[in-house]
Length: 234
Length: 121
Picture 1: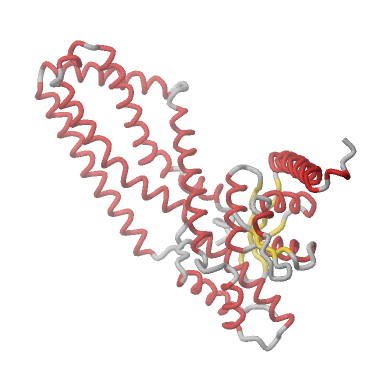
Picture 2: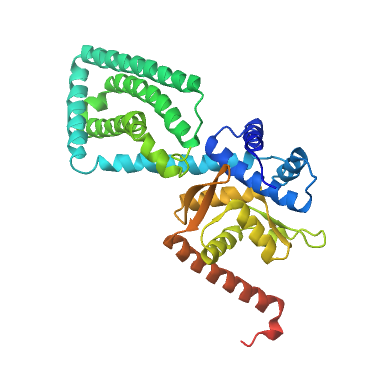
């Protein structure tokens, strides 16, 4: 005996009820449970769907699907970090390295200028503040649209979106304050090496934010298809 | 990662801990692509029901191996649902060889310790 469509739907609902929010994992677990229930029916054809499901679910242990979900999260977070790293490495090759160098040099001179003239610093901070506000608004809109659309949730997509909306907001203000504080210290003024290293690290952080914020989300479809062979099937 | 074994009500899971990856790799190497449930059933069949892979350990292990590049995944529509098949990659095959060699060495050493008289060395 095979499971019918509505029983498959029930299995999806069952996984959702047991905290498996993501469609990719739901699909794999639904197929597993379905196979197991069908096998049980071979031996005991009169067993109810509900009873068979409970027997199979118990095999997952006290924590149910939690372990599967948590481990999947770990694996995909690692994959995401690797992805950021892969993008970042591009900035050390032509042509992107030109951008990296010019931004570093640009920032170097801006900091030197800011040490002399504090108003440059104010303008910089004001500009970055505007950038976050615009950015935050864009993200809130995207997330809202996504939530309302009721589409299937994919874990990797969620990771891409979550990182995309968070990190950016943190980095730059902290760094801005750092510039402010550091520029008041004497040794910064007297140490071009320090300013150069600082500029480079800062630009690198900025690039990472840009990758997380724009580059990876732009290629999200491609990455999702690579991660999920079932992405196109559904 | 853990497997549990049902032998006379005694749990010897400790011994099998850490061998799950090797078991999966070896099975895929021999049988070609398989799906999760199929793997659990095959292990049960091969060990005549003595060894049961815990579902909560199988999928994390499969996902980890996929991320490590040892396995690839394809999805197919079977009946009224989507099934994910895992297959071994060349890197996975290499890993299988290494792990099996390690296992052989382990068994040989255990043999030497448990049955020193049988050793010809």
